[in-house]
Image (cartoon, rainbow over all chains, first blue to last red; front, side):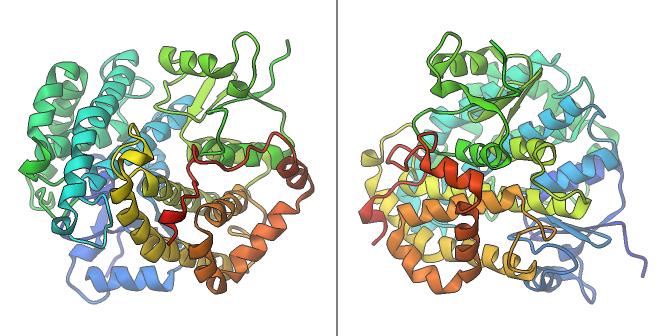
Length: 242
Length: 242
C-alpha cells in the first residue's frame, strides 16, 4: 500500500480541532489519509491510540490532532498548520505574514478553547449533563462578552488588511480557519450570531468566499465533511444560546 | 533615548504569561525593556493600551503579552518564543527540534490556560469571589485529573529525550517554560504537587538546574522577578488545593 505523504490522526466522528487541518489539506488538494476514519489494519482509532501511547517516530503528542509526515509526528493544531502552510502554498512568503498568520491562528485556538468550555466548564471528563449550571453561566459570559470581543477583533484585523484576506493580501490558512469558526458559531450559537451579524460584514463575506472555493465547495458537500454534532467542540444546546 | 532591541509589553504587576518571555530574555542576557513596568513618557500601562488599540506598526494583538521588534509587533506567548528562540540561542537548529519545541510550548500554553480557569471557570471579567463554587469543582478536576496528566506527559517526554533537556539534547526555551510551570504549580497547589512529587523526578531536577543557571539565579533574586500573587495566573487559594 502506498502511503500518502500526510497521515492525519483525529477523532473520526467530529470536526473538532482536526477540521482546521482537514480544511487546509482539502483546500490545497493535498493527498492525505484521515487515518482514524479508516477501517483497515493499522488504521482506525486503535492506530491513533497506539501512536499516542508509543510516541511513534517523533515527539509524543499530548492529544489529537497530530500529523505524521515521514519521520515526524507533529501535534498541536496551530503547529501542524505552521508546518503545512508553506508547503501547501497557504501562507505568503514574507516573515511578517508568517508571524502574523500564526499569531491569528493561536487566537483562533484560544477562541475554540473557550467555545469548548461553554459546554465543559468544569471538566472534559464529565458529561455536559453533569455541568449544566456552570455551563449556563459560562456560555452567557461567552456569548455576551468574549464572542463579540473575538469577532470584533478578527473583523478589525481583516478590515485593516484590506478586507479580503487576513495576512499579506493573499489567501492563507487563517482565512480557512476563520471560515470554520464562523461556521461553528453559526451552528452553536445562532441567536448570539444574529446579534453580532451587523458587526461582522467582512467576516461574513470572507466565509461566503471560502465556502465557494472549488475544492472546498466539493469537500463541504462530500461525506468527508462530517456534520456538526453534540460530540464536537461547536455544539448546539439551545439553552446555552438564550 | 536608545531603544532596546526588544520591547516587551505585559501587565506590570504579575508574572502571568509574560514571565515565559521574560525568562527567555533573561536567560539569554538579551537587552530588553519591560515597557509597562516603566514610568516615563510613552511607557507604563497607558503605552501598552495605546499600542493595543492603535495596532502599532504591525498586526494588532488580541491581548498581552506582545513584543515590539523594529517594525514587528508579535503577540501570543508561544509565537513570541518561536520568534525569539533562534535569535537568542534557545532552541537547537534542526527542524525536528524546532517543531517539537513549539509543540511542547503550545502544550505548556494549554496547561497555563487550564490553571487560569481553576480560579476563573466562568469569566475572566468576574472576580474569583463571584465564581467560587464553579472554581471549586473545576480545581478539583484539574488537580485530580488534568495536572497529573500534564505532569506525566512532560516527565515522559523529558525522560524519553534523555532526562536533561526537552528537545534535541540541548537547553531550550521549553526547559525554561516548564521550570516556570513547576514553580507556579508549587505556589498554587502545594498539596496537589506533593501528591505528584514521586512521579516527576526528572521535572524536579530540571527545575532545580534551571533555577541555578547564573543569569536566571541573578534574575530570580532580583526585583525584576515579580512575586507570585493572587492577581496572576498561578494563585494560591487554599480551598482550591484541598
